[in-house]
Amino acid sequence: MLRYRITSIPASRKKRFVLLKWLVEKFECDRDYSEKEINSLLKQHHEDCATIRREFIGYRLMKRDRDVYRRLPETEWLSEVSNFN
Image (tube, rainbow, N blue to C red):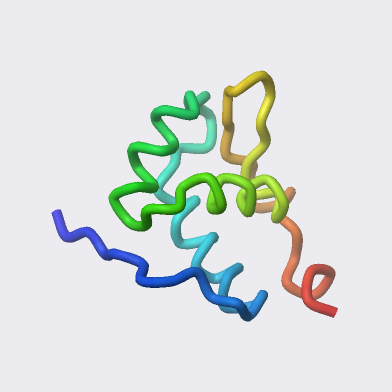
């Protein structure tokens, strides 16, 4: 399995959103993940998994409740239009 490493998290919000969408698609929609599971997958791509987890929540790609994470359906994600104006 080929794994891509992210060298840096883009400063541009549009580019960051594209990267986050690519990463969140690695998680199943109807499944709960522990923080440890999230970190394990994210660390395969970038060392700063805490920042990426926060970005997932901020862009509404995932939700968190008592250290349990769940990927949200695309219909609940912030749209590029509302997020980047």
